[in-house]
Image 1: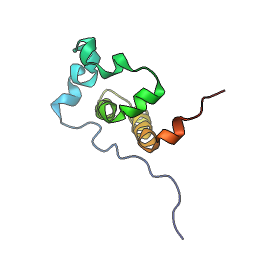
Image 2: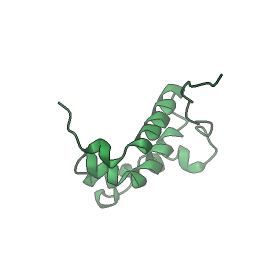
Image 3: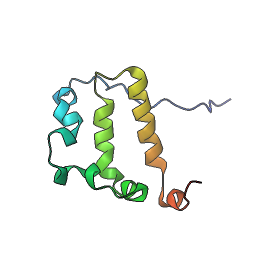
Image 4: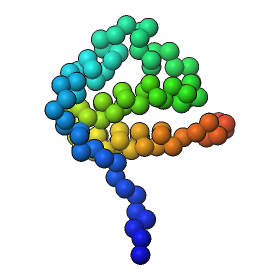
Length: 97
């Protein structure tokens, strides 16, 4: 019998010893960078965000490793990354009601 239950994303390095994970400026690039270098400041819509997900993914992962987050917060971010990794252009063709 196979186990078909969902697998929890790996958050084992959530409280890593990486100095960048404890540096607030590295966790929130917008706090230390001008708007011109903040990719989120120029997102036009969901499709644009999707196209630029490779630039946002490491930001989300860094946020998820922030030791100030609770386990639930870290797990939620990890699941969001898992979900966004699976969204394709065909998923953006329809608009919500």
